[in-house]
Amino acid sequence: MKVTVLGSGTSQGVPVIACPCNVCASDNPKDKRLRSSIMIETGETTIVVDAGPDFRQQMLREKVTKLDAILITHTHKDHIAGLDDVRSFNFLTRKPMKVFARSADQMDIRKEFSYAFTDNPYPGVPEFEMIDLLEKPFQVGDIQIIPFEVKHMMLKVLGFRFGDFAYITDANVIPEKSIEKLKGVKVLVIDALRKKKHLSHFNLEEAILVAQRLGVRQTYFTHISHLMGEFDDVQKELPEGMMLAWDGLSFEVNQPDWDTHTQDI
Figure 1 (cartoon, rainbow, N blue to C red):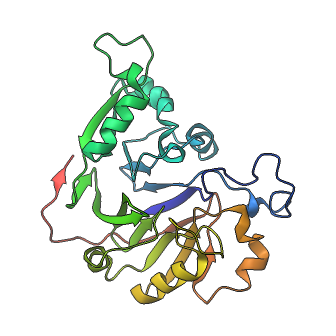
Figure 2 (cartoon, rainbow, N blue to C red):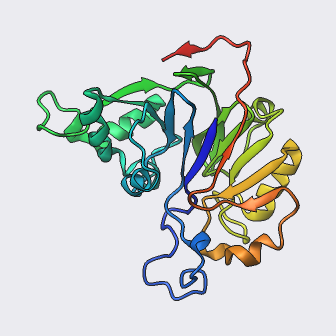
């Protein structure tokens, strides 16, 4: 599988509007961060995790012409605001976009995009096939997925494991039952907002400790604020096998043949 980091920034992105700090003024492309999202690709299947305000820009940048499904971690605006732009894929495939979300998150999406769920929708609105996302393994095309719960302060957020790779965004607690689901992960992308402690996100030190506990081979930190510091400076401080993610980063991971009962969607 190929994993691409579509966006590695926090809810405001980087640079932040009207901010004069060194990070926001940086000329380094790795200091320019769209809202957090990833794309998973095999030869047959393409899925995206979250579709924030920069979804359109991300799809154009990566020249995506085929998208099979979107997985939703939670419904904060920086993770769902771009769902309207699935209209282009609807037009190309003549099918609704499969959106995997928990029932409570589906309610939020139906409210946020109410015009797409009316009995007689206006021509051209996005079309969604809402699919219940439960905490059990499932499959989209040839991609097998294990969802697991993390906490974003009091809010329940979903992380996802794809074979040797796991993705965690918007979290500051990982319950023990989810730690169990992460055993054996070799590559991890995990939320690390900034260096200073935060009430609902891992800071850099906390995210490093999670990665070390899991014993992963390679860790990339995402959902990064301009308060983290400049990419080159922070990178010098990180342990071996750990890096700040950047927009457009891509890498390949293995998806082993799991002996699990999954639902083929």
